[in-house]
Length: 111
Image (cartoon, rainbow, N blue to C red; front, top):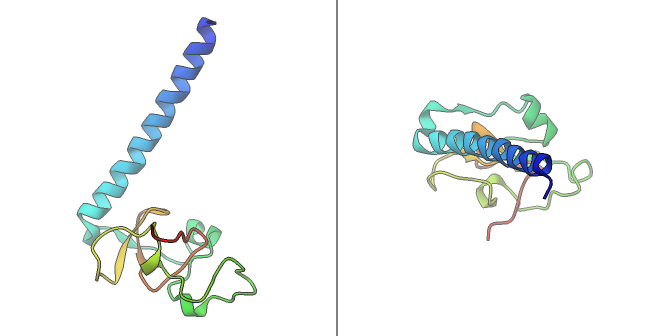
């Protein structure tokens, strides 16, 4: 085995693990203390990139062909936190709370 290749693979793995750990820590902090997290602003660059809206009823299906009636953050696998809360953490927007009536292109059916 080529030693430089194995070092490169090891370094890539360490960088990926560190990044995943940072994201997981942020998500855990928001889930543990959602009142400390800020609500996601629909004008936030990440929200704009994923077409986030605070009310799924306002989605234009012609502009967002992946949207289907009935889809919302409330029935998305990305949504975290305590059921019944109007704003909850989302796996797509680390450190932010989304409106459970909202929707974005990261919507994934619950399993």
